[in-house]
Image (tube, rainbow, N blue to C red; front, top):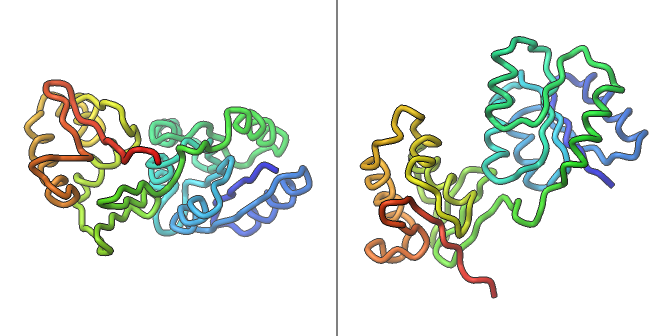
Length: 229
């Protein structure tokens, strides 16, 4: 059964979607806030997320970004906001589709079927990345080492997250600078050296001989997970 996570702060919208989706054989979870949505997604691994943008607490864009930190689950934005800028912001953050309220249930169901065909979360879409030295909860944005939480700055977190999304693969200097600092910083490779050194001091068993956060000289960096056993 396809599992849908409906995220909306309006109870009547959640009830209507739950009734219509359940009648068509979908398994439906609900969340009223952005924070609750991230917790539900990590706990139940939905096949599709239907998401409002105007949420209490963290907004819908932040939810999209939080999900994209660890999963490729299809996200359909369902919002009263119809400005082009809002649509662009949601799609740039990682949403797959955008439906404006008021909406036709038939259209939403068609878009939902299309999103479902693009695939459910795979085994790589896990919210926790664990090594023998540290563990990173991508959904909760927390890092633990030796049983204690490690504090990362927002920039350190974005850099670590960008590497963890591509385990075992080279991520170029330009891509990291663009992702973390923006396109105007794509030549500032000294930023990467400074922040990678900080991450290694916090996470590597031996920062002078990194095991997990590897430099590929002149090209970029790579997160090397523990070998499969």
